[in-house]
Length: 589
Image: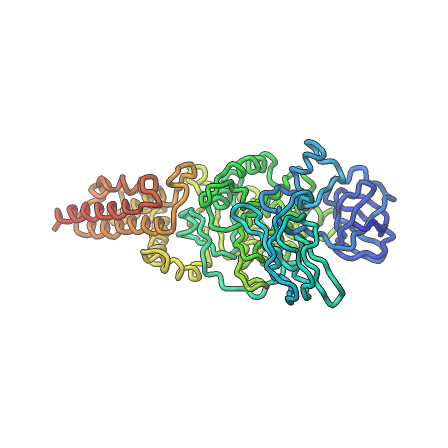
């Protein structure tokens, strides 16, 4: 902050402040209001009048208070030390603020996003005299046990290295490189700033043909998500949006997780903050916080900071993508973000559109999801940002504007079903309204990396599920006994598939995560039962005989009894099923 006065407060309307006498200010500039130096952002300019969105409680601000300009947009500080930190919506480190001000954050109090006291071991990889451009790697820092942080040239900087420090310990603010640029000499440290509303540049976008493996069977097998893809998880209160995101955050094969608690209840976010440090990363055996950044912006925090938190999270994700990492963002929930937009728009007296949301809501949603993608970075590496956005439609109504507009901009949709949640079927992702447009893109990966034909098996089980829906309507009218055995067997197989495959126990050591190979093999066993059973019924076998085969009980429990490391149990199970079917068919020959 350079401390120059750019105007005076004219009117205070909650988090929106009108300022008069504006001089030397720019749109989206970071400003400070009053002697408490509350953080705000200049969002509207008209002559010498301006409107400012304030990210803190404005109680006590009065007309005539000074407004100070910073000369830069609202930005985040990027460098080593982000991983494992808990931030608020404008990148203030909450744990450090608690030490500084106690249980309640005082107004105007702020701290930099990165610690100024911690020393980092910098290992240079660039050499003196080298020509460097934005995005290239200057050196590395070991940030956590599993994350090697690459110190990058800021994207908008080019030049020749005049000097670079030797290997050693440095603070994030210490100059490590001196560049000769067209504007003269420029010092670079371990950190740099980037505007949260401006996407970081990349070389090219690449096709999305590698799935993000989550270990959740209903997702990976039925509705896969590609790395660099976008997905919406809509669902009413209590249907398991947050639980689904927790499971994905823990088990997915992304390198870095950015979890944005945007406007959710404080106690729900408290659970996340307390649980995440104790969760163990299954791949390394260390704390999950070793690869996680948390942004906590609960419903009782200033509403305008909620609007900024989404952009803060995606900018941090893009920074690690530029280092060649695969990053997954959990945004929980974008509905609360949209509500913040609605409140701020109302206070600025803008013309409302449907359900009171501003007319630019679809544009903002699109801008956010467009920042996902599988990219070739400026340094020539590959990285991705995958966005998993929860949507909380009031009353579980999927026809409301946020859900409808989100559906337009995402290519994957995991609709949570209230009936499944009430029946304790988790994940409660409904297989009728959910879809994935990444099926054709990721199919070659599945065929190459698993032993069974995934696309064909998936299409066959989805067709059975569709048939089951139509048959259930008949059953409601006339009862199951009116159906022939061939149709009752469809209901039987689908019930087995739902219980033995789609339902997953997050608290069971074996069932909470399934490898891709286990998933396709389990699906293959169920389809073998379908094929052989349908054939046996044609030959005269009854549904009662099929239902009482002993092997069916073992198929129902295979998800709990057969570990990912040893799938030979599935081979034995399928062989037993084949023998049982052979014996049954021999009776009717």
